[in-house]
Image (cartoon, rainbow, N blue to C red; front, side, top):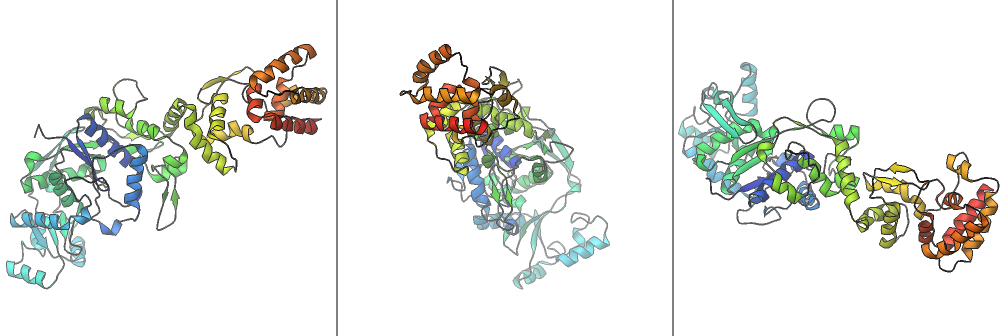
Length: 519
Ligand code: GLU
């Protein structure tokens, strides 16, 4: 047991888009696998055909590709323990169901839904278990001949797990410690259905974890109630020695109020609960995703890693590699983790401002395309440099210290629009304009236009060499009015840099327009 190679799995059911809580589960499995030099398996648990949603599997794979969480084996990744899609493993499960039947650990039950309903009406809090199973229609109460006859007639049946009452079941959880429950509270769970010739989640999950040599089951708290049953199944198969260790992760909780985080919380408060945008194939409904919202994958991963775990110091910003080193299941919290979406935006801000200037181009491209503007990558990079967008604290055009908080690429546009679009109008009531555009300004700007027209070398240096001495001798201070002409407001970068970026023609055009408008 001790020297088995660490193997963990992420085993979603393709019932829709991957919830952000599922992403965290996969991430913790990833961190654990990497830390132990182990394998991470991607298994699709699609035995519940009624809940299958087309596109969900592809969506999940694409989500992890975007997030940079890599699997070693599984659906779409290959490997020696396949197939990794449960719907392709029917024959395997049949064999193991038969094994339980042969060993008297399970039995066949023919009760129809109507018969079960009748029993429920008759017995309060009816449960199919040791106290009731001998009143039902199953292979424990019918003769072997009757059972064979019913099956040969094509009667539908299920296979139920025979649970002995009164046993103390121990789940040894790496996060929660020892969890004990009594087997009497469990019902004889259905493990297999003849109708679709498929096992239920419980059987398929245990058989696969065993055959795929899984050593640790790290999953959400919602699966904790299934764990005692799973322990019993391992025993029934004679696999107790290689039973995986369990770790049930804390729930993700609503940002406000009590209870589990839901899609509704996201809709209400304006944050996504899915990694990627999801287009529901049935309803056509579109749910927002972290990627489309402008989050960087590193920020999402970093933020999620800290929902339920922390490295024990104050460190918040961590690369995936650092997390692999620091991660510790035993430091995961038992208590639910409040989903702090404001903090998520803070993480994104931190990662955005760490990017090199040229890395902003894709975000810019998207915005500019939407606005119908063509710009080169060099121009986009130059705007980021001029605006010092990466700096939280900056000095504005008037020399004031300011703070800026770009949390999403969409925040870029209001700050940088004037680089690409000339002012169309001016607000005479604007404080900056009122103060800096006086009766004489139009004339002064006209003179200034002439000075600029004669400059051949329209670079920062070329302009400085001419404009500075001119300002000195004429005694004019054209900077703020010039800013009004080119930006339309009291914001923006160094004026020479802006004019050089716009070029002579555009600079003069904007100046003439402003002079005309404001005169
Ligand atoms: N198919 C289950 C899910 O959708 C897997 C639970 C487990 O990890 O055992 O999460």
